[in-house]
Image 1 (cartoon, one colour):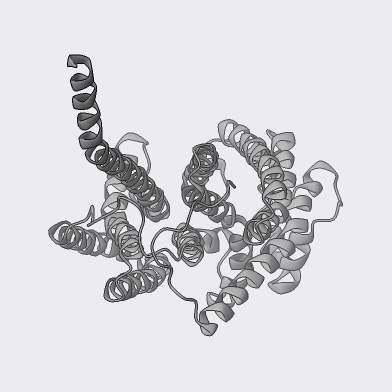
Image 2 (cartoon, rainbow, N blue to C red):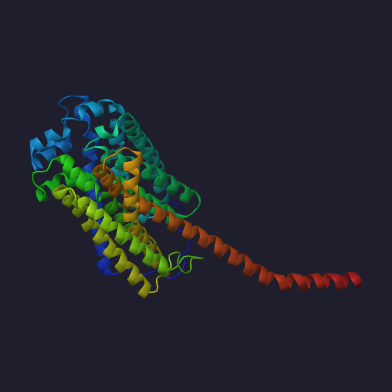
Length: 414
């Protein structure tokens, strides 16, 4: 990360309670990353060498049941065998990224600039190589042969694209000396990567809440909200690290009141359509709908409250960022509804698969769009601030230059 720019505007103070929550969240994320690293590294060893240890399968077998694990992975030998080397590259580097992420975060917080830059180069290269391995697997695997079907294949493909684009934009922001945007894009990238450990946690936790389901069924419930959870976490982390009340050149809002109201109305209408579509499939549809609506409502409530509080406190920049993400969240259901129709019509998917895939990718993709809007907002603000400084400089220098010209003319005449 480049050196932080000069402080702009006043910064909001951090209360002791907020500091405690931030430390707790940081410790929790680091613990999950450190715990998942050996699981990721060993996940595919049994497919390369029969009987090789796999930490994740061992834990799942003892957390849920051996039958639960055996049934889930019984059909994976064929699809994984087509791309085993690429998948091992993907998972081993994925484990390394789980360790590099916390190291990057701590080096940035402690302002170890040289260490942060060196680790950043390693992190970026590892992301590109790991995602290349995942791309090979997806290219060689038919969507219907992916674990839990075409829905998971589509979700993985969008996660891959989002991860690669996020780290690329993060690098571009660092080169362009936008440390605040670099921070946002890298946090979003790491949020996408965090879907892997969180999915494994849900494989172990959801069977307690939904007993009797296979891992494939649990997987479908998890993808209903994992994208939303990780991008929300990235947003909260970004806002916690950016306490500026204003940003140069950023005034007003790109989402006026009528646009925000229209987004809410469109989102509500799409949510009704999604709910009615899921309820057609009985108990299975109800589980998927609950897996989507409950986290969606919780995240919406947090965004709305934070947006309102920032406005009341006069923190214009925080209010604008919360507002952009709130608008994107409202537009996620219409996006999912449109994606469902397109996937059903042009990807030859049945309505159930198209709906679960559309819902699974909606929030993650709209959060990416919101982060893009935030970046463009900052870029536009910088241009406006630079134009304002040039105008002020011209207004200040103009009379002096004119007087100097008059003086030279008088001396020439004399």
